Amino acid sequence: MIVVRRTGELHDAILARRVAGDSVGFVPTMGMLHDGQLSLVRRARSENGCVVVSTFANPGSFTSLDEPSPGGVRDQARDLALFEHAQADICFVPEVGALYPPDDTTRVSVEGLTRQLEGASRPGHLDGLTTVMLKLVNLVGPARLYLGQRHAQQVVIVRRMLRDLFLNVDLVICPTIREDDGLALSSANAQLGIEERHAAACLYQALTAANEAYGGGERSAEVLRWRMTDVLSREPKARIDYVSVADASSLAELQRVTGPALALIAVGIGRTRLTDNMPLAWDVA
Image (cartoon, rainbow, N blue to C red; front, side, top):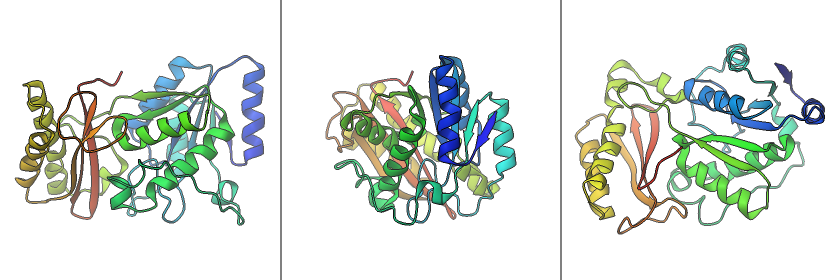
């Protein structure tokens, strides 16, 4: 695996693989790797001649690509070893100045999708996502971009951005990887204490309650939201930020589920904020 830190080095490394006839698959991350992120690398490996990965945490309010982990310790050597074990070919590890030079003033916003849910709870977060994602996609120029359903709102936003800006990139969405009790893998999980970790199972339980109600014929979004809220409210350590049943394309809150939809929740447990989601009326390949 080649590790590059400058945009020019990245360009040259990818160009050499393209000249050799390899298609390029790209997996962006913030580091602090877990098996959910590595599953994207393995999927990319199976579908591309060249796999490019990146590890970059947006500065300041522009945190993105994963849950914020203010208490986490980033072990770059560990991340690079895991990338190499997953058979990535090129790892881009830029300094902040490489992506955000001092005179950088451009920000990207997807109107209608970056202000609700996570955008309402964490202002600037999703504009940071779209900005850094566009920079990385332009630098890598992949045939395929791999994201996890774990971050459903980000997936919806990136899909719309790729479409609106005529970026010739196939977006490949991979299923959420979960622990045995259903908790979605996230770097934020490491911040949970033993009792908090046990309490965190309520997220998956709430989503499952909504999904089972939908499978039983319930189509009222209000009832589905109530099912999730009821489960979360029974966990004393859980502080509900939002509970949503939204259209899978527009993220608009629904009254009735008549097509592809998303059940989404955000919950605080201790000092840790957790998010999760589950598709309704459709499956992630």
